[in-house]
Length: 274
Image 1 (cartoon, rainbow, N blue to C red):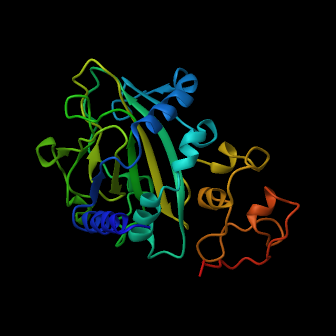
Image 2: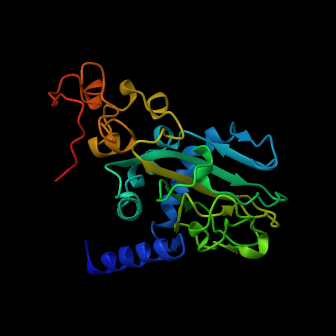
């Protein structure tokens, strides 16, 4: 990796530590975002419109982007994702992909209530980070079209805080940029006061001993992922995790469910890469 990439990674991790969030402009070419949008278009037309104010009654969500978008698979383990994840979640024995979702905020949508993503885990006030999440800008993100609103530094607060719109700023960014934030950061989708849809690909990553937000083994079953790279399969969950979690059947490596013709070490203990 070049010195420039090392510098970006250093600044990224410093920002995540200090503010709990960071935008990396131009993390991928705009045409990559266009390809993802094109590959997901047929599914997005059947996406779920929010059934509550929190979900957004003018917001459309499309799941399963990994099996549905070859292009997204090519950047799911982007070097910045891996560096940020290791920097924020590397205190755990393992961390992994948790979920991804194509989110489109429609014209006229109101601002989402501020929240922490880690609240999905029973509102626990962890003493450490358990999630590192993000958003690929499929379109430009502006304050007018509903760019995510964040409260920098709020990752150091507790679950009992009450924050308002005035405590936040818009995470504006150009198409192809990548926004990172910790699971403890207070944030929410912005109000879309424009006449166009704002599209982003939401990412979630978590320490290995937490349940993944979406069931990756139903979204990406063994019979359908045999031609995927091993590192991606490990990342989405075909790997032992935590300290003795995730093994399959007779203490077998879960990747053997995808490749029964290959030999894998047996045993339930997690082996970290050296």
